[in-house]
Length: 407
Image (tube, rainbow, N blue to C red; front, side):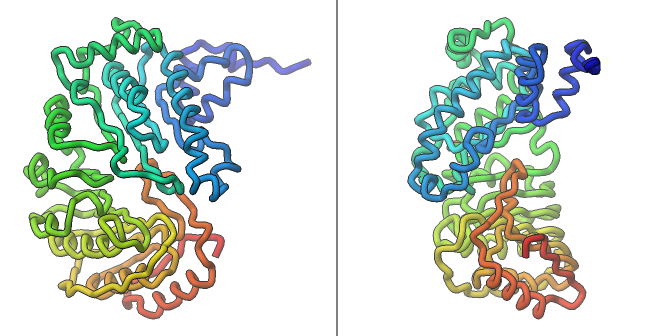
């Protein structure tokens, strides 16, 4: 006699509570269990669609297809259809988190605009648009980033045309959406490879009825057109405890000459390309480290995340840095063992006089979603040799932890 399926007989609210404990991908997989579960996943409170959910593993691992851009071209429409299908199925139901992790460009703006309008109107607490092409080898142009329409933030009438489109495209009537609530529910906004002007920041902050930064943290994941941080956020910088940013967040080195005193900054996380020149490269990363260490007397933890394999190995010209007594922990991810990365770490050994722990891994941990990216192209012998050299130069009271199991 077949065992009785007691779970399926439970009320919908209990089943939805069970689904909320699963990832979005796991929740979708429950649709094959039986007829009762077929569409239940569409009511999952968190919508997270990632690159891995869209692109088949064999194509993700095919370097030639990624470099040619074929993977992106073939799967972009699939990603858009997937998001649209989920929104059609929700019919205005409550949604707490709306997160898209896929390298979309402004050519897909007609769809993304509706997604953002839906997220605003439904009152999500977390909105994340991560259109970064990294760590995937997808060709990009920095002039093709998506730009959120400013009229979405017009309290008077800006969202109305989008509500009409939502009803037409997804059969979501406006009365199902909490339009009056707008940004009152929003607690976390993460935008990556999304262009924002100063006018956008003003519009977002003026609609956001929260004291910012609420948790004394700030993320600047990609370059902006102006040094807005010393304008809109200037009043908060002295309270800032955690800063996460891409080293290309400013137009040029001259911006760092304006750094104020970060008197409460305890945790600094920087992301850059592995060993390239330019605004996103490791030389800029080193210069950023120098400036922020000098401006952050109580910095406790420093994270450096390098992504994409090194193509060049420029020389590091050391900058004199006064001893820093409060820097105790360092994490370096995306490590290939190249000379430039080693020299940057050795420079940290020199000024971090009270360093207690440094953790190093070839896995890139830079992404805001905490999704690891393994650098399988890293040369095992090169990494081992470099780790040995770092061990020899390690400060007396510090411990070096290599986090990779495969070496």
